[in-house]
Amino acid sequence: MGVPLSAYLILSAYLFVLGVIGVATRRNALIIFMSIELMLNAVNLTFVAFSRFLNSMDGQIFVFFVMAVATAEVAVGLAIILAIYRNRETVDVAELNLLKW
Image (tube, rainbow, N blue to C red; front, side):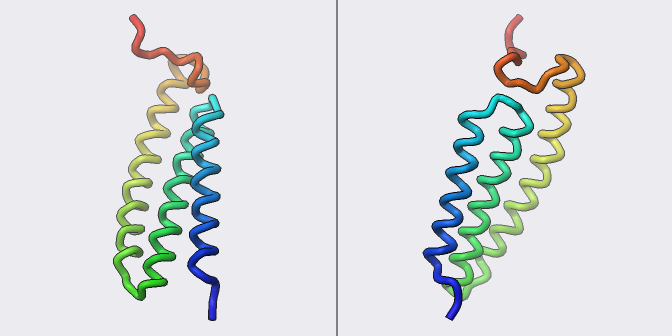
């Protein structure tokens, strides 16, 4: 016997909700970015749990692609955050109004 599927799903749901709360309540762009990564990892945990439960490799293949996209997101996102910080000297999203004239 091992850890039941429900334990993985509860942990994954908890991590996802924690990420949503982080995105909704924080104003620092880096914290929001980390919360989005936490939500991606929660989804990855769900994929792996169902893959293990169903004795299939499909979920693990999806995790590989999600991790590849997350890596690209980290590279581009951190570059954008760094460029904004250099121009505005803040990463507080409440103070950033880049679309105003």
